[in-house]
Length: 336
Image (cartoon, rainbow, N blue to C red; front, side, top):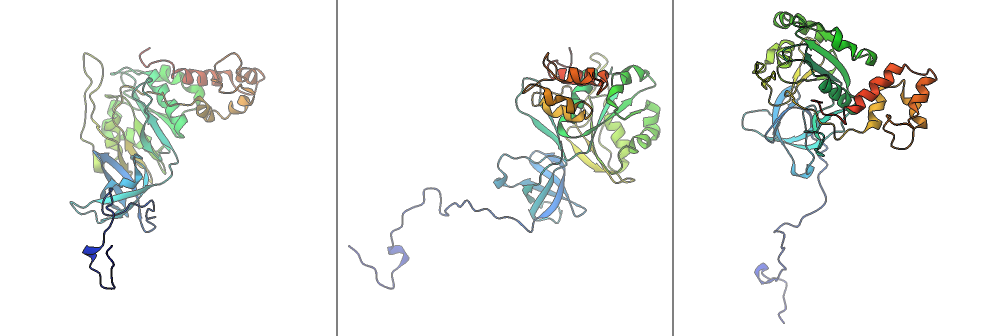
């Protein structure tokens, strides 16, 4: 047996090798208390453009965040090179708690939900009155997603020179949703942007709509300093538009305290993730009537307490009809 004296050489000491590498792993992670605060403006192939102290910084997600993804609108904490210079890269080490989320699934059979935008105050649902024809099912689905995620809805109807808005607005009159009606000429002159801007002051507003309705054209008019490369056309055969926005992008309003978040045009809006118990929160006149509902009530079944609540005069029957119509969109596809 070999004995070691005071002056042993390190090479003489036998050590057990670490199978996981030379440095032992630890569960202790830095708190990054000195991290800078930022906001995610856009995401592109794993690289996130963030606004930090008035400058744009390119960043990537830190490994310690695991599978948690940051999306446009997220408030994040960053460390590393925050200069914003070319070829520099910061790290996002923390994603702050979200006040709202706009989520969707690819279709109603897809269990994987995708967060489109975080921390938005409002959802502007843009739809054309003609060319392409309006799709009330898609509007209903966007409304359900807004109510579920904690966003206030705003209807923006375009191309009123091609068709009157009254018939479509009648479907949503009982929901008390604010709306703006615009024409193609108003989009070109900027008058439409001025009227829409009145609803955006002090808010972060996400714009959503299917392709060809003029959504990106409207966003470009609202934020002319950072115009999106656009403008698509409507396919004469299918009646569908061509996508002109490929990634969500947050843009600051120059003449008002607010943000415009342009999102890619959608052809479908899956609601597989929606919980009916959250949608009822958008109907404060009906919500107290759910206290007598059976557990996990869908609010559209024989034992639902809302029928008696409305019959007793506590709420307008049209409001209950609107609620059930929206909830029914989870069971119907947009083309039905």
